[in-house]
Amino acid sequence: MKNNNLFAALRSAFPAALDSVAIETDNGLCYSWRDLDRATAMMANLLVSLKLPAGSRIAVQVEKSVEALMLYLATLRAGYVFLPLNTAYQSAEIDYFIGNAEPSVVVCAPKNFGWVSKIAFKVGTRHVFTLGDDRSGSLLERAAQCADRHTVAQRGADDLAAILYTSGTTGRSKGAMLSHGNMLSNAMVLKDYWGWKKGDVLMHVLPIFHVHGLFVAVHGALLNGSKMIWMARFDPRRVLEKMPEATVFMGVPTLYVRLLAEPGLNREAARHMRLFIAGSAPLLIETFNEWIARTGHTILERYGMSETVMLTSNPYAADPRYANQSERRGGTVGFPLPGVSLRVQSDDGRNMAVGEVGGIQVKGPNVFGGYWQMPEKTQEEFTPDGYFKTGDVGRVDQDGYVSIVGRSKDLIISGGYNVYPAEVEDVINALPGVAESAVIGVPDADFGEVGVAVVIAKAGVSIDPANILQKLKTMLANFKVPKRCYVVAELPRNAMGKVQKNVLRTQYRL
Image (cartoon, rainbow, N blue to C red; front, top):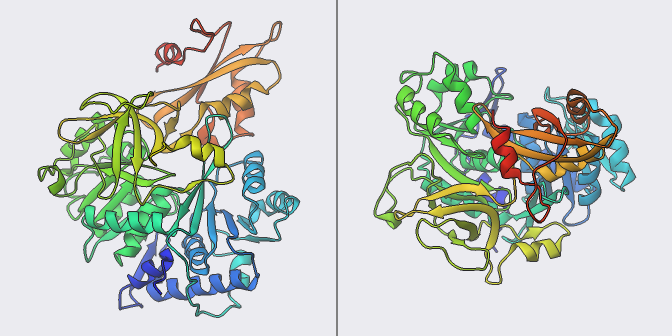
């Protein structure tokens, strides 16, 4: 019987030379493929020794490290469900995630053990481990006592592999459930579509708590048996130093903007590169064009989300499905990936004509099974014929290229991170003296978009905008905190009393 465990596929792609370098870190450490195999086996055996219920969630909020990556792989290997959490999340957010997911195991940074363990134990989590980015922590201490051989757990393609929380427009996060089959099918398609080849080296500079860094980048490299140059944090000068040793780079638009600010970025620096990929936020056409001028490379922009992994991509090479077109067009996210069905519909279910704008809907083996413990919400987000309503608004041109023109769910994407205004508004509205608030996204050259809060004070109360922002920094992840705040007498409204955010966006553009 075939094992559809994603880890089994990744492990089978390891090169025969297990003692060759798999990951080289920015502090000089080198991990071999054998190290990855042995360490994931030891961590998997630790998890198995805890005698966890089937389908147990392993919630992880730790800084980026190779050991953190190994923990993800070990969770797959042992057949449990991985739950990555953004390192910027504060206690109120972690309280919600742990309360909602009810993980059997929580792994946190050593410095956060005190408050994280209280939250975890309160909801019945029995095991809380620590893992530092300096190879410290109780997880590694315990795993070191376990055997370094482990038989990969048998899993079906539809079995749950990961839950990714994506903020909801109502202010409550939703856990997108991704199966082994969802992620493996997408990784296999991207391996071919992006032309992964023998000898490729990935420069990994992204965080590993979301789809882009953990699934798209890591799965791509492992499935190709490719070495990774591993950077705990993005440093544009360090990236330029190591670029001659790499062939593939993945980043959010903000990273490309910061690299363009470096005088050392030129054709010589990028001479060994094969492919630059951008996603998680819109890439400004100015950035797209300047990158070509400076490096001679054309960035490949693609489109995906937590619920679907990758959906579309500009072509790496000629795509026979679209008249062998190979052009990477700025301002578009390319063609639907092989196996993905994409359509654009009106609110009343009418298929839009070429070039017409409507809601983007998708279907395919990569599309998630639904939201954790939210059957009604899941049903609401799928059409009767099985298409997932992405909430993004876009169009398809006469050549088949998809363009995203807006977000019906009012999403702000800042530096590649999703920010839902309703969630931030709920927090602002609960602050003393606040009557109402509206949070909008405005264009920003560095982050793509940044949040702006427009606040109405209660009658007779004086509010300091700087004080509001300062309070939010203690209550929300930093990427969710608006960059500016204005206190106004009233908000613009339509005849139905709804706040006209389009008016606010025009008024408060930088």
